Image (cartoon, rainbow, N blue to C red; front, side, top):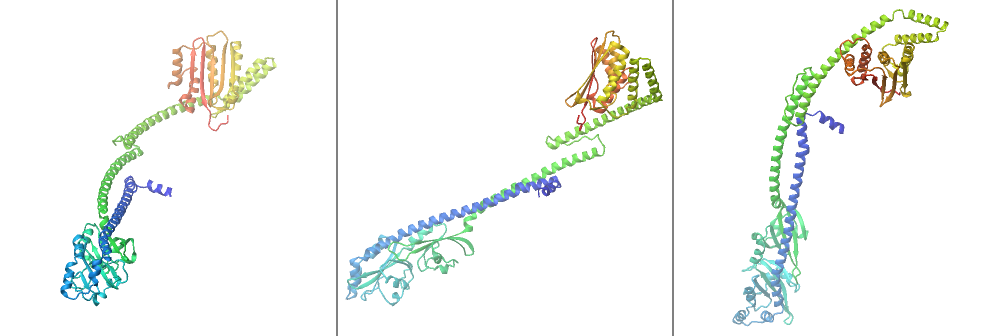
Amino acid sequence: MYRGVRHLMNNMRMRNKLLFSYVLIVMIPVLVVGGCVTFYLREQALDSAIAQTVNNVEKIKSQTANLLRVPTDISNGLMFDKRLREMANRRYSGMVELMNAYHQYKDFNEYVQQYREIATIRFYSYNPTLVNNLEFVPVDSGIEQQKWFETALKGTAINWFYIQDKEDNPVNRLSLVRQIPFPEYNTKGVLMIALSQTELNNMLSKEPFETLIVDRNGIVVAATHTQSVGQTLVDLHLGFDVQGAGKGIYEAKINGKSSNIIVDELLPASSVSGLTIISVFSTEHIVQGANRISLIGALCVLAVLVMALVLITMISWLITKRLQRLSHELGKVAAGDFHVVSSVEGMDEIGDLSRRFNYMVASIGQLMGQVYEASEKNNRLEMAQKDIKLKMMASQINPHFLFNALESIRMKAHLNGEAEIATTVRLLGRLMRRNLEIGSGKTTVRQELDMVRSYLQIQQFRFGNRLIYEVNLEESAEEMSIPPLIIQPLVENAVIHGLENKEEPVTVKVDISMELRELQIKVADDGVGMEAEQLSRLLDRITGTEEPEGSSIGLRNVHQRLTLMYGERYGLHMESVPQAGTTVAFSIPKEEGSNV
């Protein structure tokens, strides 16, 4: 998978890479974070609304309980009121007596005047001598059939009903209903205390959400919207069985909208039936603030993303345009035009690449010039080497005749007892044969030193005690490969120039050692040496282009062979002190893979 992604990115255009990176790294994460924040704000707003509604329901529950305590206390007082007992059970002989009794009994009216929570108080009695004055109401068949009346007769506990009677002056209010027994008269009646609808409505008017108070029969006794009072939950078409669900928090669709419903129950003291408090709020209404904030945030984020996309597009266009120009200039260089100068400006990486491109083109031009000069130099050297080969070939005319002649001389000297002459002739023949056998290949240090020793022995025969030589070779360097005839010319130069103009014995010393994976070769003599000016002219002849003269040919040949094979730093190095001697040194790097 990694290879596939890498291959895809490598083959994608730079502009597309930037746009793809922007979408992947910026746009998608921002949209995801924005969605998460929107969802979080929505949930926070919903949770806050639920918590607020729960608190409001608790507050309404507490206020309703306080409101219902007033009629409860009044009913408890009337339960044992003697005047009510006498009023309800006395048999009146006529209307005058009854009116006088009604006029004297003002307790119900006083309670209504004293407590704003009370709308009216009625007592339903089986006393046939009573007349309905809206406070004392004789029980008839119509009243007996009312459900609330039937429930009240079952016990003395308090019941709460929204009474919808069909009397001339209907109640249509939430009412306390309870039985008042009179054991001493073996009679009973039903007390009804109707609450003030205004107080109930005022209690709910400031609620931010739709709130209902429902009695046990599902009739709305109070509501935020007063037009709902007196209707049943079925009439409201909530689409949710509130009373069947019981106390709790629910989610449902109310009038086609997703809503939250909070249901709580209130059971007042001394009551067998209570009230249900319902608060309904639309989820859309709650989260619209969060949605509005989210929409504004989304628009801002979208605007920022669009602006960033425009900027990314412009930046990518600027980058690709500069890269295309640089690519075009590289194409000219690839076609062989080394006079191209990149004109891409800037201090960024592309500008730095342009400057390095110009430096590279200039360096290539210089290198090509150097290669051309080196090629010309090699051609001249090759011509010189060919000339040397022709001269060497001319010197190899009839070598067998020469070797046979030297062998005859050696045998004659040996027969005549001239052992030293015979040894010298043998060394000379071996030296000449070795020189003729050596081609353009390589030899070992040990074989090269064999030739050097043969040469020194011949020269010692020539100069006698005037020549002293010493050859020092580290054992680890014996089998290292070196070019042939690379040491012998230096020894020859040391012998010839060291003994020149000097009567005292001259020592020629050859030291060969291995240091830092390089073969170190040094040829020194303690002859007459050279002045600094003379040494400088000699170095010019060795390293220059002009043809050297005399003994400088051998030194130059060695120097050029070393620099051509190993580089400039591996040429000859010379030091000389007048009347103290001359030292010639060079080094050869160890070949890779060599075990020596």
